[in-house]
Amino acid sequence: MRHRLIAAGASLGLALMGTQLVAPAADAAQPVARAAAPTITVKVSDKAIKLSSSSIRAGLVTFKAVDKKAKGAAVLQVLRLHAGYTLQQLSGDIPKAFNGDTTAIATVDDNVDWLAGAEARATKPGWFQERLTKGQYVFIDQNQQAPVFSMLTVTGKVHQRQPVASQGRINIFTYGFEPRGAIRSKGWVKVDNRSDQPHFIELQRVKKGTTRAQVLKFLKSGGNSQPSFALRARDSFGVISPNRRAAWKLDLPKGRYALMCFWPDRLSGMPHAFMGMVDMMNLK
Image (tube, rainbow, N blue to C red):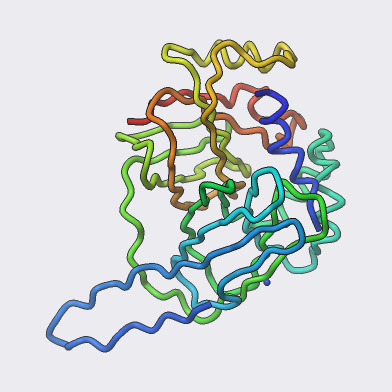
């Protein structure tokens, strides 16, 4: 498990593009109902990332990630680069960041808006919903080192759309998680990064009664074998920047799960999980 979780961060050593929704006219005497957020399907293969739409009006957008790779899961990530910072620079800084270079970590943290993402497998798409404002957005596959990416153009002012119905919330803090409410194993959950650094979520099913201390002990031991408490089911949610919110659709067995983040810390260079960013939750 440890190799798989670390790889989820290390594989960000980057691989280095819409339907416009128009609200129907409404009777002035009646309240205007918000339209549902449009869905963009993103097909990820070994050679390309293809979006069902290349442009869309600003507002809530639902993304469906579909794995078309020969083998291995696709981990779709959406990001926006700050002015003057390029994909080439990012692709050079990411490996340094995951090797503990704090200067590179700070550069990546300060020059990229990470806008969430989801893992997809051949038999199960990944889903997430994010609010996008006007600009250019980059789509990459975290699990692919080939130079494959795509772009989405978001135009106009933010269009008010109805968010997905969700139950529960996962709050993310600088070195911890706070699951709140009855989070369902199959359904949408809100994710809110309230910290001062980017984070992502590795969700690993574990045996009933497994504690945070057990997971931390295993991670810090450097063990390479499968831990006795680990079960097969797992999923991951993409990197999300501070003060960003998104929704993530889960499709997992009920049970106990460990939440972990392996993003490198901008002060120490260590993956956050090794600094204690591990928490437990039960999916109903």
